[in-house]
Amino acid sequence: MSIAEQLGADAAVVIYRKDPPDEATLREIIAKLEDPPTDLVRRDSLFKKLALTDADVETVDQIVDVIIRNKMIMQRPLLVTADKAIIGRPKQRVHDLLA
Image 1 (cartoon, one colour):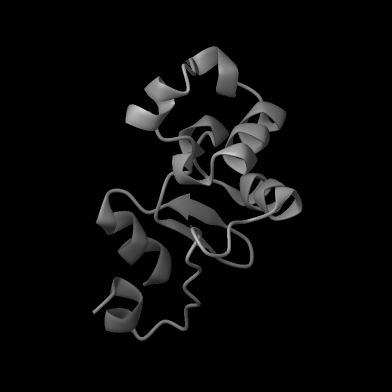
Image 2: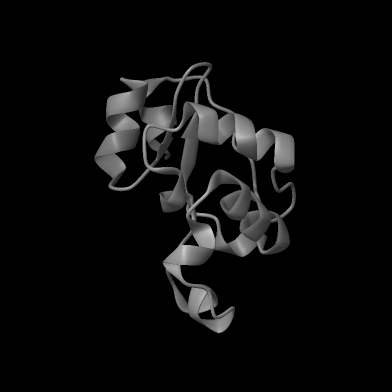
């Protein structure tokens, strides 16, 4: 059971692998994001495989471009409400946003 279900929150789940956000949606999310926009980019093995550096994801334009070209690099889970967006790590942040 998800945290949203536990709290009785009405939530839509988007499977980003099947339905990745487009450029306009990413920009809307970034505009609402409480976290630094660069945190949307995972710093994992794909980041290394693509030979990316922090300098490659400093600006909103760079972040959007990297995520559009490589949807698997987007940090998740990502929670978006009408006026706020957060990266749902640690899980307590999800609870705090939806409570």
